[in-house]
Length: 101
Image 1 (cartoon, rainbow, N blue to C red):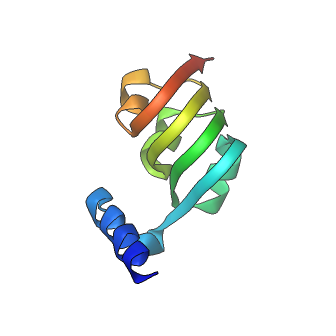
Image 2 (cartoon, rainbow, N blue to C red):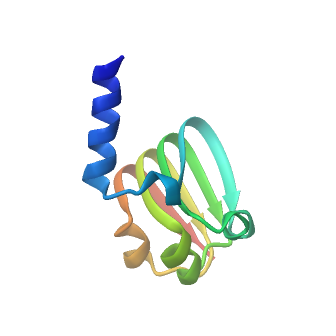
Image 3 (tube, rainbow, N blue to C red):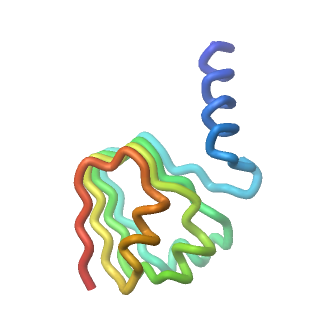
């Protein structure tokens, strides 16, 4: 519906996202992504509305260059050498987060 379209457009504006430069991955129950896969796309990624999100091999460089935002995730597991504070600054509405090397 057009109301839903307007709502989605509003969300994008609120996040300051240029959709042509951002890959949106959303509405997934369980996904596992690694740093190499993220770098290969050479675009920023927005991850939202995911039950379980597992990110492996994440570095500060990958975070800065390729992770736009992570929003509405029930469980987020991050493996890699990344600054927790910097990583969490990219997150909103996350129920549970765990970090490991």
